[in-house]
Length: 103
Image (tube, rainbow, N blue to C red):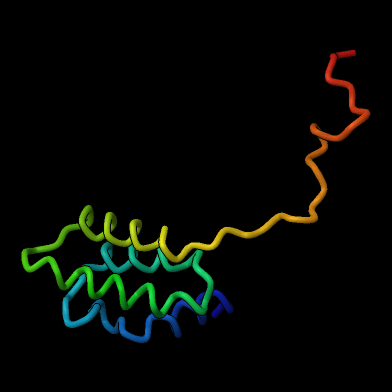
């Protein structure tokens, strides 16, 4: 098993057998939630999953893939911390001295 898979398994502490906070999720719905957790920093995944569970509890009616996806994506945007590229060199097409005219 890869290290990323192990990180996701450990982050899914509250997710067991397709259950998230006492609510059963289909395989597709659980896959959506775990896919949204994957790009997050490992330290943020547990809190993300807890927030998803709390938000799902607010929906007493039957859930569907669309509702689960909307909730997971909205919460993912709160936790996602994009990488910083400070100190990286400019792309080749933007470097000085490079001709933009076709030869």
